[in-house]
Amino acid sequence: MTDFTPEEIDALYKVMAARRDMRHFSNEPLPPELLERLLAAAHLAPSVGLMQPWRFIRVRDRRLRERIHALVDEERSRTAAALGEREEEFMRLKVEGILDCGELLVAALAPDRDKHVFGRRTMPEMDLASVACAIQNRWLAARAEGVGMGWVSLFEPEALRELLRMPAGAKPVAVLCLGRVPEFYPRPMLEMTQWRRGCTLESLVHTDYWGGGDGADSPPVEDSPAGSAESPTASAERRSD
Ligand SMILES: Cc1cc2nc3c(=O)[nH]c(=O)nc-3n(C[C@H](O)[C@H](O)[C@H](O)COP(=O)(O)O)c2cc1C
Image (cartoon, rainbow, N blue to C red; front, side, top):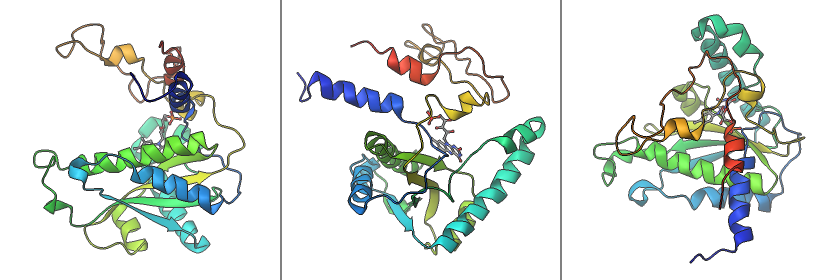
């Protein structure tokens, strides 16, 4: 028994399959009530020990946005250099839409997280997992509302923390570009640009023991050419009821 109609259930899966990481935006502001809903969607997320470690900064100052963009661009060059032979190819990828998106938010981990022990004693990184749940909620809500979102993690956290005057112990984890888009990519952009192909679900699921069942555990490495693997979108679309 479910609380939802078959149409509502289908809509949820449809949104998941259609969600994309967006880097192209039409520079249009979002209505304030829509932004409120997207903020609220993130706050509905689960969190370890109910610690709700997410904090969000809405960046409204254009100059500040440009400085965040500059930080990301610096890290983009460093990432390219670290990639060795794929450096030039990486530099041709579009990896953010910071200057063009309608709204810019920065998601951060709250300070003073060490006092939260429940669920974190052996895995303190569960605070980060909780923030990721909040960001994913926002991503899905945005897609349902026809709003694109891009998650940017190319930055030096300490530099961004200082720039945004976050207290010691807080840690920025994502620059989130939100806004109207010309169109949603039909597939992950990294697949469309042949940077990397997604794995099939079957290759990542094991039975009983690691390596048991059909799981081949052979995800493509970063320098594999994109090829014929089924896209995550396609496998989600194949879901049977
Ligand atoms: C934790 C995290 C960090 C990411 N950081 C970046 C980033 O810095 N730049 C970027 O272009 N995409 C970034 N992405 C987006 C991924 O590249 C994208 O999710 C992936 O290629 C699959 O595409 P899809 O989201 O459209 O399905 C990030 C995604 C996640 C989950």
